[in-house]
Length: 99
Image (tube, rainbow, N blue to C red; front, side, top):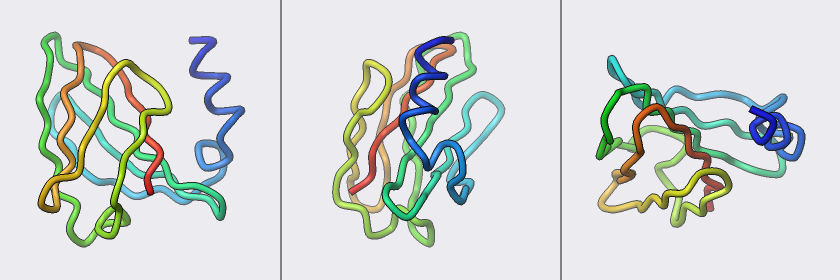
């Protein structure tokens, strides 16, 4: 919990940025937070098993993104053909810087 509070303190987009809902279902939620200085993708997996997610990004703030760099979590994500691909452990969160 402390590490999430530190993450929020470090990144203005998490405190006061605009928010866009990118993808969701019964066990995951993905959104983008954007400030003047940064854009972050946040993905939660609330399932009791690992989830391999493919989140379409057309018509979203991620549509023109080229790279996702891990800011929080032990996972990487990639952009492939208009889709974010990420595999998250059970009940975990990951945050990515968008470029």
